[in-house]
Image (cartoon, rainbow, N blue to C red):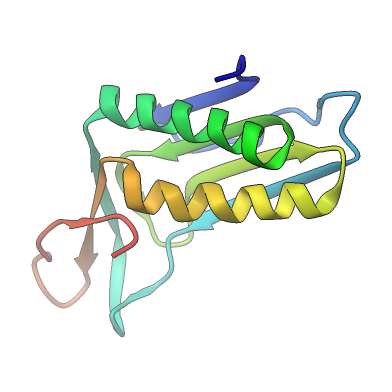
Length: 141
């Protein structure tokens, strides 16, 4: 694998947008925010409790960023995921992909999110407004 130009973060703190500084070779920057919606399976929630095996999750996120850079010719990847309680309307995921061209930045972003949901050990448990709580599920399922 080539040397990765990525920044990976798993945090309990609210996600903040990184500064608008990117690779000088980049002609495209795609930012994606994953936000907790008000409904889960058609039922109102107050938020989602995210749990992770942090060391493994960070390692898998680093692998994904490196693979995406190689596969889609991305110049850089910033990938952040919150853990702990994330209220409805707050961001649980931030992804920035930079590339020379927009098609690669969009395709790389889509791929990273799809693979993150399959491969990264982060679990979510929605907290329903009218019921105690649901059992944990793997993110994306």
